[in-house]
Image (cartoon, rainbow, N blue to C red; front, top):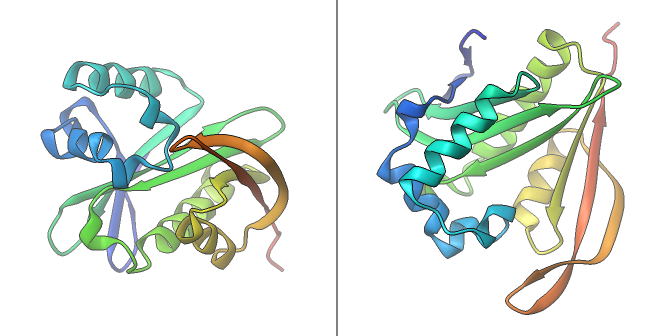
Length: 175
């Protein structure tokens, strides 16, 4: 995989060298991981190494780090996991809180969705987000994803049940 760039960001393969104290701090921060399924696990450097290694050893996964062009800071990750029928799941985490609310999520989703359709020849990408994660929902909707369904009472957060939005975007041939 080559490096993917936008005006503000660089996307490149996430490796074991990217498993740092900063990355680990994102996963143990309750505010950052509140909408991640991994919030149910205890995270250590060892478990993070194993996770990155397992993701990268599956040829159906593309695990990318999001880096700022101006500071070369690793600020988050985006992942595409291919399934059958040229369909894949996409997920994103912006770990650096100082980049929240600056359009990084939408820019990353747009860029990697376009790359997945063009370079991976995918025909559909799917995503999910918890109903109270409005920032994620807005980012996906802003980038052309549509709500395809809603799973009621699907997850538990702070001992309360919440629903999940199921989103998708289908490849559109450009004329």
